[in-house]
Amino acid sequence: MDILIVDGYNIIGAWPNLNKLKITDLSAARDLLVEKMAEYQAYSGYRVLIVFDAYYVRGTEKKYNNYKVEVIFTRENETADERIEKLAKELSNRKTQIHVATSDFTEQWAIFGQGALRKSARELFIEMDGIERNIGKKVKKIKEKKPVAKIPLTKEMEEIFEKWRRGEK
Image 1 (cartoon, rainbow, N blue to C red):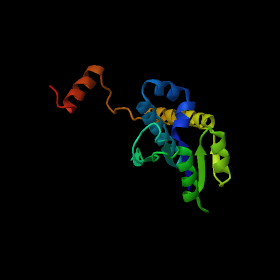
Image 2 (image 1 turned 135 degrees about the vertical axis):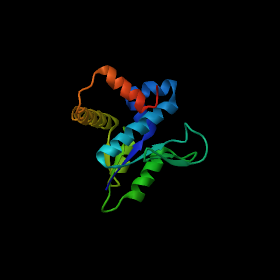
Image 3 (image 1 turned 180 degrees about the vertical axis):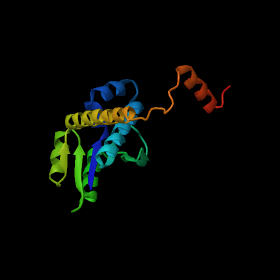
Image 4 (image 1 turned 30 degrees about the vertical axis):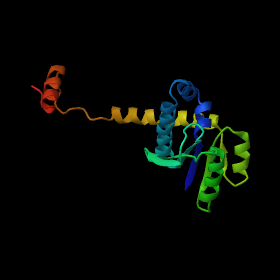
């Protein structure tokens, strides 16, 4: 099993679209990152955990699942780096390969020393871009293979049938 642990705010700060969004709406930037990582998880088969510092969201430690992605807010006075290192140790075993996505050079070396593989924010961005393009191609192929009606209908008739289907008059 492969697990990807994402340093949430580090990735938000490094990806141009998320960095721009965080200036006006940090919560929306977090949500968009979670959505993108859900696509990544679905496409790659990796288990994805995103760790956010409590520095930006005060309060007690929180964990929740969103789109089957595990989202963790650290405890107050605990950094995302510390939590990521703990998770890398806890989750590591013979059958599991840990990958950590961060551009924090110090963090990369700390987790690399624990046997985890590192992935820079740029590498993850490029990989995610490729995944989104591949998903787009698959959706396009599915739409092209969509069976055509066996009886050719005019646009007017299609609209009438659609209204009937929806229960409209």
